[in-house]
Every structure is written in C-alpha cells, then in structure tokens.
Length: 110
Image 1 (cartoon, rainbow, N blue to C red):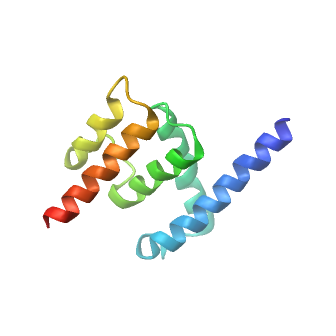
Image 2: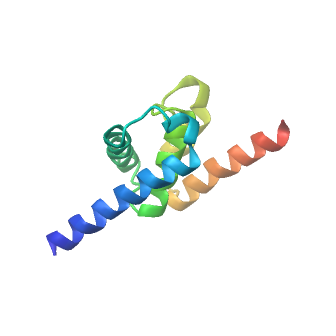
C-alpha cells in the first residue's frame, strides 16, 4: 500500500511540474526541474498547514504560490489570500474558490 501511495505522490509531483512549466513559462524559464520539484514540495507542505491535502486544491495552492510568490499566504500585498486561507469553518474547496473568485474580480476591475 505504501508503494502505491508513493507512486501516486510521485505522479502528482511530475504532473504539477509539467503544469507549472506550461502555465508559468516566464516564471519557470530559468528553473531546473529539481528547483521546480523543490518548489512543489514546499507548496505541498505549506498547503497542508491550511488543511489543504487533496490533489486538486494543492495544485491550486501551488499555482497561487507561483503567481503571487511562495509567501503569498503571509505577504502584506496578498493579505486577502492569507485571510481566506486562515478562515475557520470553510472547506479547502471553498477557500480556494474564494481565492479564485478574488483573482477573477480583480482582473475584471482592471
């Protein structure tokens, strides 16, 4: 069972690295694969601090980390995201949906 869990984890990391290369070509252009993997590992750990552990929402969290910076959950410029992540009583889906909604609303305001 542990071998299967490890395989699924490794598969998630590979797919996330590929997704970051595709979605963030400018941000990842100077990064080696090992650098991106390390970024993904840190993102998984950071997402876990907020109870985010399912692959879909962990990926969304990592994409926010790439878009806003690894410290987006605590940075003053993105305090709105940290506030959402720290809200109690909301599911990981709802918290990540609220972050997506905020991004959408901000882009529509521009």
